Image (cartoon, rainbow, N blue to C red; front, side):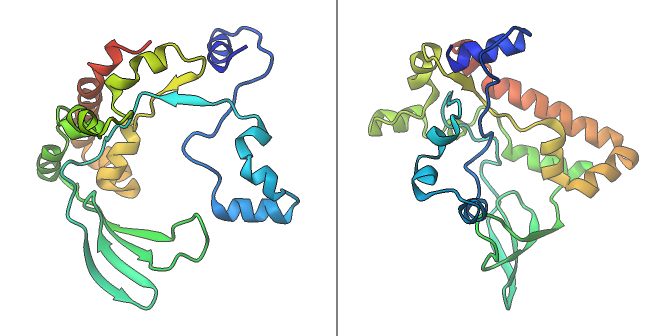
Amino acid sequence: MTFRERFRRVCRHKKVDHIPYGFSFADPRGSTFAAWRKQGLSKEQQKKWYEFIGENEWIGIGNTDFGPISPFKEKVIEERGNIRIWVDGWGVKRMDAINQPTAGFQTRRYLEFPVRRLEDFKKIKERFNPYTVERFSPTEEENKQKGGKQYWKNRINLCNYSDRLVTLQIPGLFWTARDFSGFEGLCTMIHEQPKLVHEMMEYWTWFIIEMLKEPLTYFR
C-alpha cells in the first residue's frame, strides 16, 4: 500500500496496514538529536533517519512564497552583549539572542508588530499581491534559464503520478493575522477591533484562493 493510498483510506475511515505519519515542517532540531544520541541513537541511525523511523515520504508542488513581497528592509536598531534588537522582513521589531544558546532553537521576544489599526493593514496589503510572479520562486522564466525543477508547472506530472502524498502547506487565518499583529495584539483586536480582524481574515482568504487558483487546477 502506497503512502497516497494509505492516506486516502484513512480520510475515508477505511482500514490500513498502518497509520501514515511524517514530520510536518522540518527535521528534528539539532538539540533533539543530541539528546537522542545520549539516549542511544547511533550515528548510522541518525544518518539514515527517515529510513530508520519508516517515515512516509510526501512530495510538494514546488516553491511557494506567502510572505511580503517586497519584504520590509531588515534593520538593526541596537546590539548589547548577546542581545540584538532589530526589524525583520515582516516589519516586526524583535529582540533576539545573537549567539543562540541551544542548537536548533531561537531565543527571541517580539516587541512591536506592523498592524495595530486598519490604516496599518491597508498599507501592508500592498506587499501581499497574490499575482506577484515571485510567489512561485524560482519563477517560470528563471526555470527556463536554469533548468530548475521547483516551479509548479514543471512538477505537474511528477506529483500527479507519484505514489507519495502530494502536500501544500498554507498559512492559516489566525496564524497570519497573528504574524501581522502579534498574538496578544490579535486577541485584543478580536474584542476591540473585530472589523479589522474580519478584514485581515477575509483578505487572506481571497489572497490564498487567488494565488493558488491556477496551480490547483492542474494538480490531482
